[in-house]
Amino acid sequence: VTVPEARAAMEKPLKAMSFPAGYSYTFDGGDYQNDGEAMGQMVFNLVIALVMIYVVMAAVFESLLFPAAIMSGVVFSIFGVFWLFWITGTSFGIMSFIGILVLMGVVVNNGIVMIEHINNLRRRGMGRTQALIEGSRERLRPIMMTMGTAILAMVPISLTSTTMFSDGPPYFPMARAIAGGLAFSTVVSLLFLPTIYAILDDMSNGAAALVRRARGVP
Image (tube, rainbow, N blue to C red; front, side, top):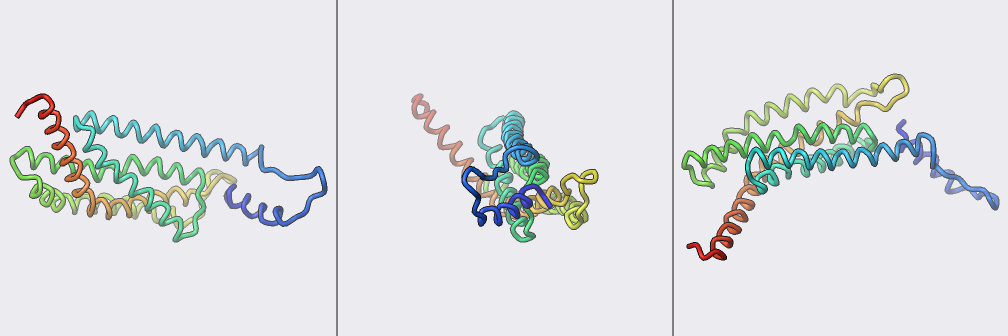
């Protein structure tokens, strides 16, 4: 039983009780307070990780827009995490945050592999639309194989109740977060990443045209 589950189980009967004047209950302090502080720290860690991933990709691609297309995979992966948690009835806890933190570093690989290949095709002289089609088709199998093996590796852990040490939190929320996020983001990214790429590329071209027009350059 996780700390949030224990708290929810205790709050229900406590709310139905009538306490004498001057008496009340609180969950502040102890493990509850520590758990809340840990969750807040994990949210901060997630934000820092997102910023660092974006900065690294922006430096590699020498662009601020293409990394944004890749980061859309992170958004899709978060939806996948909550989708699988809802299906399996998994409670969200500290191990779930750790799973999402690991997930963010893995899920961007799909976008990096695909967009880098698309850019290479365009540098060879291929048109954007054709490069999007060919790049997506040629990278479909490698992405599916890589993510498929990663998801299957999480299945044994996600189906067990193994805990950290003897009284620590179980590992399965972390494994389910990784598996659900990878599965959902892989499918959705393969379908929507080329479209997001095209939209951002149009925005980049439009912004460049406005700058040239403002400078009086034809």
